[in-house]
Image (cartoon, rainbow, N blue to C red):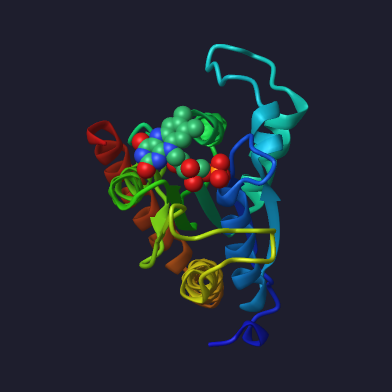
Amino acid sequence: MSITDSRHRPLVVGIGGTTREASSTERALAFALRGAEQAGARTRLFGGTFLHSLPHYAPETATLTDAQRELIEAVRAADAVIIATPGYHGGVSGLVKNALDTLEELRADTRPYLDGRAVGCIVTAYGWQATGSVLTSLRSIVHALRGWPTPFGAGINTLETRFDSAHQCSDEKVIDQLFAVGQQAAQFALAFKLASDTDKQRAASQPGAAGKIAAGAAGAARNEDRLSVAV
Ligand SMILES: Cc1cc2nc3c(=O)[nH]c(=O)nc-3n(C[C@H](O)[C@H](O)[C@H](O)COP(=O)(O)O)c2cc1C
């Protein structure tokens, strides 16, 4: 299946980075988004400077800032997402987690949170231990947000790999891995879109089928509600 099979160019939104100007995490994310573009996607990157402009998410606050709204609207429109975090003290950084907490504003959407979206996961850390453990914990967060982590996630040990600029990485294998994350996110988005378009066409051509599909979706949503209690 190629992107030319569809009139739809998927939108892949990248969220990640640190407050450091030369953030290797943000540079790794930029590589992955280029992989998504190579697979035919449109992309948008929310990097460390933007994430730093977000207020600490507070669910009881009635008004949102412009930056919060911008992130929420971009993810609402996204077909896939790529998240890149450094390992900070064995976990996802507060900066990135705050951006993900802000997605609570998508809870009442038809596609709540990251529902129906592939999510590529990237972790940088100063050593292999946090690289692996934080990748696992980032994927658990994605599951809680109802996203579909891509089969391949990239763990980058920044003790060994340098990003001298947004377009330079010292290790060709790491570039390949980051491109794979972007490509898988874009390919899933395209396949998911084609599948749901086919469902809609089938429903439109078969009287009564639309009701059955809607009833099936409602049943699945009820199951997800039960599951989300356990997450
Ligand atoms: C507050 C803080 C906590 C960190 N904790 C860990 C850690 O637990 N394990 C680890 O391997 N690296 C840790 N690091 C190193 C970063 O994960 C690593 O340098 C990362 O690549 C930084 O990303 P950046 O270049 O985008 O800023 C920590 C760095 C900071 C600033």
